[in-house]
Length: 439
Image 1 (cartoon, rainbow, N blue to C red):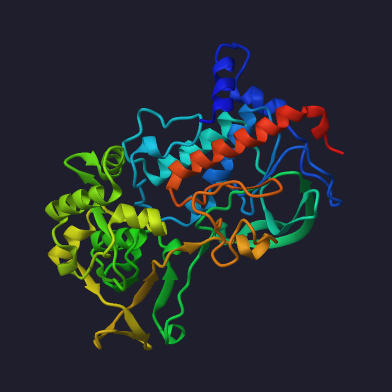
Image 2: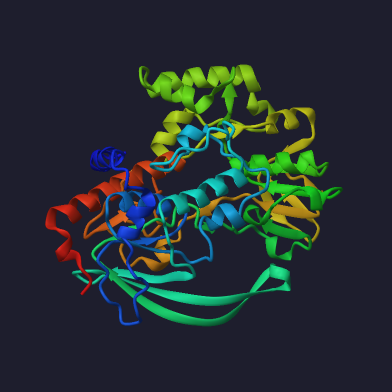
C-alpha cells in the first residue's frame, strides 16, 4: 500500500467511529451529472473490473470522491460473463488480493471463479463503491484544461428468459474532470484471428470467452486454437467431459507446473529472483519443469529460446501454468496439432499437410485492450495495442492514469491502484478540498 494511504489507514484503525462505509458516505458525489457536462470534483474511473474497484476503494480511504463508469450492467463483467466454469485463480490467493481487503481465510489457496466474484461483491459493499452502470465511453479527450468523457447510456430489458437483452433507449452524457483513470484492462475485447476459409466452415465457431463447459460437446470433435492458459484449460475441461479434443500449438510456449513439490511455482520464482539473476532462475525453473512435466517439445509444444521469467520481463508474455493438461496429452486424451493452413466446409488443413474433420472450433486466441477505440490520446497509450508505451507505466500527463495494464495480473492491479490513489490523494490534500468543488 502507498505510504500516504497506509498512514491514513493506521490512524483510522484507532477511530471507533470510522469504517470504509463511513468513508464512502463522506465521499458521496450525487452523480451522474447532466447532459451539459458539469465539472466533477474528483477523478473519473473508466471500468468497474478489479482495477477500477481497487482505485475506487483506495480513493475512498483517502477521502477523495470519484465517479466510476462501467459499460455493462454489473461489476467484473469479464469474470462474470466471459469465463468458463472450471476457472480458478492461477496464482495463490495472497498474490491476487485487491488493496485493503484479504480473501477470507476459509477460501482455498486457489479460489474458484465463483469465490472470486463473491469476494468482489463483498469488496464493493465494504467500501461503499457505487458504479454508474451501462455508461459506455465513446470518447475521452483532454481539452487543454480538463478531461472530457462522453458516454452512451443504454437502457435494456431482458428477453428470452434472461438469455438476451433488448435495447429500449439510449442517451448520451458528458463528464468532465481534472483526472482520468483508465481501468478497462488488458482483456477488454476478444481477439478473432483471420484464417483462410474460416468464414466458410460449416461447424460451430466460437471464441473461448463464450465457452462455459464441455458438457454440451460430449461425443463431438472439438479443435481448440491456442495454447495459452485459456486454451490449455478449455482443452482439459473438454477432455474431462469425454470430448474428442485437439489443440493447435502454432508457436513456442513455456509450460510450467503450477506447483513444484507442493510449492507455488510463482512464489518459488519470486523467492529465487530475490537473490539470483533472472537467467539463473530460468535455468532452475526449466530443470524443475523437466523433472515434473518432461520434455514438452516431444509432445508438440516446443519452448522459446529465452527463459520464462526473462521472456515475461522483456515481452510481457506469461508462461502457462499446467493444472493437468500435459498429463492428458501424454495419455492421448488431448491431441496436439501444428498451425492451421486453412479451413474447409467440414475440415481443417494444417501446416503439415494433413486434414481432419471437426464439429466445433474454439478460438482461444486471447484478448486485447479497447483503449484506442475511445481515448483520443497517443502519447501515453499506444495506438497499436492500447497499452502504455513504457512497461509498468501507470501515470501519464495532464492527470491521465492507467490501472491494470502492467501485464502482472491482479498483483499488478493492486500496485497500480495504490500508486494512482496515493498520487491523486496527495494532490487533493495539498491544494485543499475547496478548490476541487464542482463548478
